[in-house]
Image (cartoon, rainbow, N blue to C red; front, side):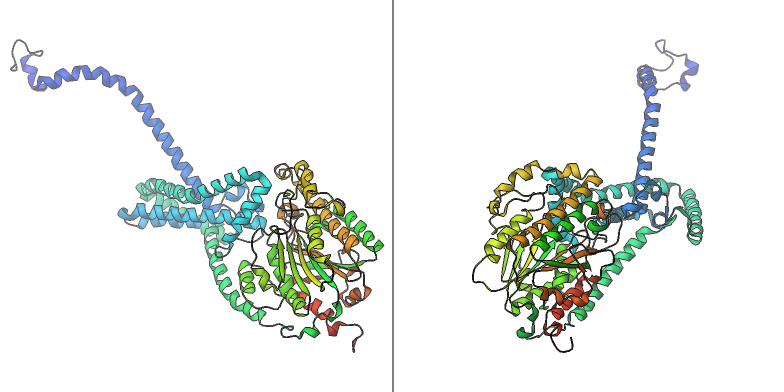
Length: 591
C-alpha cells in the first residue's frame, strides 16, 4: 500500500511524521499495553536489587574491617574492640586507586586472599593463646592438631570432633575465597568514585595520624589508630628469626653439662639399692593449692594422704618447680626435668631428643638401675624412649588393660600403678628400678573420674567399666566452668590418693617417690594467671634420703605453703644429682 491511499489510517499531510513501514506501526500497538504492564514491577525490582547490592557491599566492608581489627586474645574479644581504624585498610584502598585499571581486579583479589590467610592465622593464635598462652608457631605446631582432635573427641564426642574438623577445613578453604570476593566487591564502588574515595582516605589518614600521636583509645589498652595486622606480620617474622637464633642458643646451653662423663661409680651414690619412681600427675599445678574454688577440695586430700604416709612410716618434703609449659605440652616438662635444659618449644624438644644429652634417667641406667617408662597415654611406639635411656617402655598396647577409657585417659591411674607393680616393681630378684610414671586420670577434660578399688580387685581393669559409664559427660561439665573446676580438683585428689595408696600397699624402706605436676591446667581453670608453678614432693621411709635434701629448704608434708621454695624445673636434674652424689653425702668431708 502506498502512502495516501484510501486504506491508509492517517491523512496524507501527516504521513511524514508516521513510520513509513506499516509493520512497525502495527506491531507497536499490541506492545503498548504489555510494556505498560511490565513497567510496574521494573522499578521496584531494580530498587530491591540496588538495596540488596548495597547490603552485600556493606557486609563485605564489615567482614574486611573485622579481619583487620579483630583481637587475638579472648580477654579483649569484645564488640568495642573492633571499633578501630586500621591503617592497612587505608593503604589497601590507596593501592587500588593507583594501580592500572587492567590489573585492579587481580590486585584486589590477591589482597583478599592475603587477608583470608591473616584471618586463619588470627584464629589459630586465638586458640593457642587460649590453651597454651603462646601464639601459633607455623614451623612446628602442625603436629599438635592430632592432639587437638583427640581432646575434642573426649570433650564433645566423636561426632562433635568430626564436625569441628569439617568446620575448620571449610574455614581454611573458604575464608581466603570469601575475603577475595569481598575485596573484589569493594574495589568497584571505591574506584568508580575516585575523587570522593581519595578525599575520604586522605581525611581518614589525617585522623589515624592524629589518634596515633595522641594515643587515642575507645577501649582501654587498645589504640584506635590500629595496625595489628602489621604487628602480626612483624611478630611472626621476629618469631622465625628468634627460632633460628634459638638453635645456636640451645646448642650453647646443651654444651655445658657438669655431669657428662661422670664415672658410673660416682653417680647417685646416696640412692644405691633404692627404687626411685618419678611420677608426673597430669595438670597438677599451683592453682590446685591456691584457687579459692579448688583448694578446699585438694587440701584435705593432701592432709589425709600425708597422715596416711606417716602411719606407714613415710615422710614427705615439698616445694614448687616452675614448668617450661602451661596448659598442655607435658612432654616439654618431662624433657626439662630429666635433661636439665629449658625445653619450652617443639623445636627445642626435637633438638634435644636428637642429641646425646645426659639425662636423669640415663644417669640411673649408667649407674646400674633398670630404667622403665610407664606411659599409659601412649598409643603407639615411642622412639624417644631410646634417647631417655629406658630399658623398657610400657604403653597401652602391652599393659593388659581390658577396661574402658575415661575420656582422654586410657586407663585409671590405679590400674597403671597396679600394672607397674605386676610387671616390674613386684618382680623377685630384680635390680633396683628407676621408673618414670605418667599418670593420666587428671588430664582434661577431667571427667569421668574413677574410684579407688581394692588392689586385689584391680585385675585386668574390667572392674572400672561401670564407673566410666556412670560418670559425668564432658559435654555437660564443660558448659559450666565452676563445675569444671570442681571436677579438676577431684581428679587431682584421685591421682594423689592412688599414688599414696600404692606407697602404703607396696612401698618399703627402699622406695623413693618423686611426685610432681607437669604443668598448670588450661586457662579455663587458672583464669588469666601467668603462674607456671607446679608442686613437687619427695617421699621416702629412709630418713637418710630426706637428710640429703636438708639444705633445700623444702617443707614437710605433701602440701607446699605459699612461701615454699620455687626452682626452675630445669635446675632439678643438677640439684638432684649433686645431693645424691658423693659430694652431697652429709658424712662426706666438708659437710
